[in-house]
Amino acid sequence: GGGGPLPLHQIRRAIVAGRDFLVRLTKEETVAQGSEDACKDDPYELFLVYAVSKLMRDLYDRSSRRPLCHPKLWLREDLLDRALGKCKSHGDYCVLLDTPLLRVMPYAVPFKRRLKIFERIITTDRIARQGSPNSMAQQPSVRLNVTRGRILEDGLLAVNGMHGTSWRRRFNVIFTNEFGLAEAGIDAGGLFKEFWCDLSRLAFHPNYALFATTEGGDDCLYPNPSSRAAHGCDHTILFEFLGKVLGKALYEGLVIQPKFAHFFVSFLRGDYNYLHMLPDLETKDPELYKNLTFLRNYEGDVSDLALTFTIANDDFGTATEVPLMPDGESVEVTNRNRYRYINAVAKHHVHDRVRDQAEAFTRGLWNVIDKSWLR
Image (tube, rainbow, N blue to C red; front, side, top):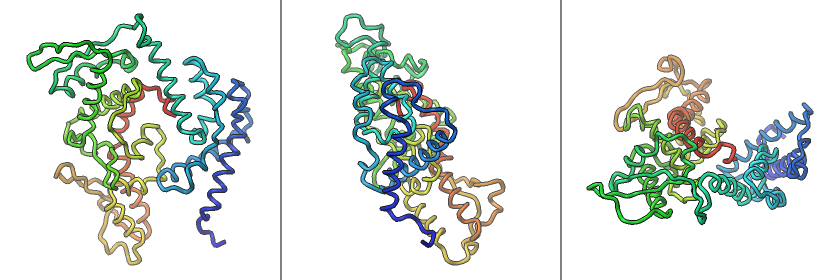
């Protein structure tokens, strides 16, 4: 061949071969039975696992954005089915979650099975901390006084100072009117659900300027790059709070509205893949992606376009020029360095401008939901 990209049918064969190879190497059957000998300390074997698993992860991330094959090609339907049936306690589910198979290639396990493991871990931990909903021996709850009309402000005031694991306790919501009088009724779970869903709807709405929506047609949420201009230096505190809000919703089994952009979900997993900056930019800002594609394919002299290694940030009408490299304002974009410029622009928009917000949000989420549970 002429060194071009692999045809799709060969990529699909490589996916199947890599999937089956990793399944064999992680010895799912042995691991499920709790053996400590599942992954031997053979340097060659460990290197193979690392190299093949990284290739497979990159292919899977790429396929998640632009499908390379049918989703079922990544799966082995039988994986962890018997092992899951044997789990009885919180510890059993955590051990299952920590198997080499789920550390190396979680995407090979059907999503519903992984979701069931997550739900069982959450449920067993919640019962241990809060008591059974039908039991008289429930643990003490956290009382939240919330004024209707001040749900977001009162929610932040009432719980943001609490330590992360305290968010796993049962919350008891007392609604008060504008005169400070408590509404009649006892919170048996319904008031908390109402409060938490309303809180999420308000806080994640783009009008609050903490989140923005992608322009690629799917209206997915990602941190608003201009959140600091809207909320000041404390904007990261708000993002950490919202991370805890999402974590509490997951912990209590509540369905809330946010649908996050793919590149932001990668932040939440803690494994953003820089290979996908340009595809991610296409979902976030199709017009900018189109302009960068034009620059990449431009057949003339790029220096005629009079570009430098700078980018203009627009924060609610206030434009600020930001260098993309040291002294970027004096570095001309040419035919030789245009790919570096394109990657720098993409990284600026999908990573650098939302990094502080995403890290704060993730920190809040992981304070409530253990990072390993989200595998």
